[in-house]
Length: 343
Image 1 (tube, one colour):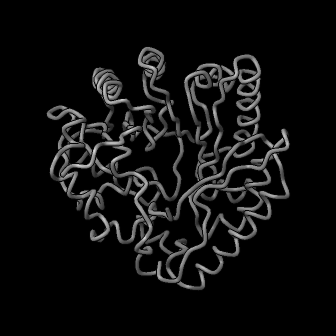
Image 2 (tube, helix red, strand yellow):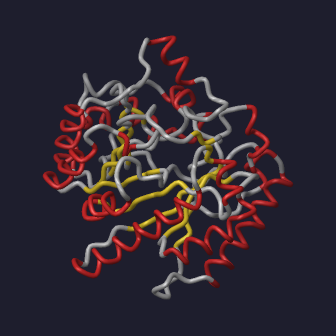
Image 3 (tube, helix red, strand yellow):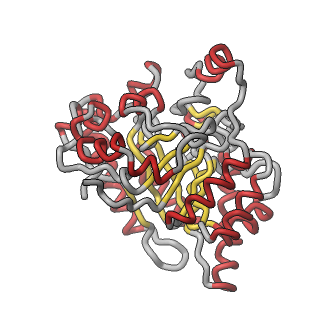
C-alpha cells in the first residue's frame, strides 16, 4: 500500500553550470572537476538551463499538490539565471515561497536591490559560507572576496530586519557550511561571526568527497578525524551559548552533531532520510531525483522518469518511488549517506 505523499518542497536545477565561483567541493565547478567539458563532449551542451515554461508548469503542479516551498538551483548560482525575477513573480502568483541557496556574491545588482526583491518572497536564504577568516574561506571558495561577502551579509540582514519591522514577515538568514578538515577548525568562529551579523542559523553537512584531491578532508575517513570533528561540535555549542545575536537570541545550529565510530563504514541504522516522501529534485533536463546525493551516486536508486513525460504526482505514487521509500536503508548509497540524521 502506498504511503500518502507529504511532499512540501521541490528543488529545481534552473542553471547548474552558471557560477562565478569555483568551490573545491563542488561536483561541477571544482578545479578538480571535469564535469563541464565532459558534458559538452558527450552532449554538445555547454550549459544546461531549465526553460522557464517548465518552471511555470512545476509551480502550478506544485500548487495543486500543496507544496509550500521551491528551491531554485542549489548547483551553480541561481541569481545568474536569466529572468530570475520571473520566478519570484510565480511565487507571488501561486503562494509558494522561495527557499534560496546562494554563494553570497549577489551578482548583477546591488545587495540592497537583491534583498528588496528576495526578502518578501523567501522563507530562508542559505548563504554558502566556509570560513571565519579570509584565508580559509578563499582556500575553499575560489574566486570569492570574503570581506565583500561579509559586507553583503550585513546589508542583506539590515534590509531583512527593516522589512520584518514594517510587515511582520520574517525571512531567515542561514550560513550553509560544508564540514571539512581545512575549514572546520574555524567552526566556533564562524558561529561567532554569524551571530554578530544577525544570521539566524548555521547548518551544513559532511563532505561528499567527489575527487581524490579532497578525500583527505573527509572527517569520516578515520576515527582520529572523527574525534577532531566531535571536538569542534563541542566548541560550536559553547560558541552558540556565548555569542548571541544582536537581539539577544541564540543562533540555531542544525546538523552539527557528533559522528559515531561506526560511521567510518555506515551511518547508524536508526538514522532517517530527511527527504524521501517530503522533497523532490528536478534537473535542468527534467530528470526526477529523490534526493540531493551526487548525481552519479543517486542514479543507483533507479530511473524516476522525466518532467517532460510524467507529472510530479505520478513520480511520488510510482512503484519505484514507493519501494525506495520502504527499502532505502538497504541501498549502498543510503547506508553511507551524509544527509541521514537522528530522528
